[in-house]
Length: 326
Image 1 (cartoon, rainbow, N blue to C red):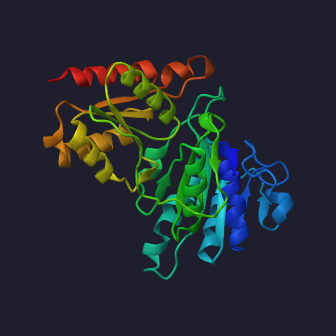
Image 2 (image 1 turned 60 degrees about the vertical axis):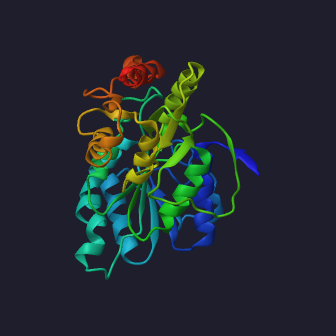
């Protein structure tokens, strides 16, 4: 069993899906001969040929439109946008067609497509390359939004996304593409969508996060553990639909919750989780829910991007504030 990175988990899942199902095709800018900007599709063109690994023109709207058309006629396209900002022009086809294909046709057609793109900051990318637009896509009915945070979850969740009969937005936190290695078996086993993953158990505090912020959140949990505080860490993994049951069950035991997101604070997923806790879990809370988020500004250029993203210190400070409430 090979120890692989998150980006290699993506590549392995794509290869496995294409091997198992001839309806799966990969398309996007430079995904073929060059293997993609981050090498997510490296080796696929040589193995599966140019009819199944398609280099497209620099035209994101066309990529999305082609994918909707392919999916409506029985294929399973996996489209790539090179960076998160380039997914925005695709919204027309995603919002107006992919997300509502099943509803519009009263179930006669579905749209089994996956749109993958790297998201988030932390790699010194230029402007419009570092956003975290999970809330934007999560607000659209008919879409499933998934964000892996480890090599095994990248492999298992992407397989599940490709096999899903409806459209899935698969956001890849590029800052942790090569952060860690993990032994992952290429056995074709998918992981369940629509559930949170509990990364560590605890009894004093629940930290909820997703994507690249898992890295800082686990580091904060380690630091708090050193201070004698038992911390439970939950990786949301599927942003939409949201598994509130796992989060509520955790808060029932700990009584305190801090939510960490890289995206701007206003109208973010953290706000949705906090509102849901207030709605269905408020009697279990011993303290107000805290959010640690990016700021409500355009993602800054590289000299300031690490100041924008939640740090271990900000997470620990928020946790200590919550724990001070008796």
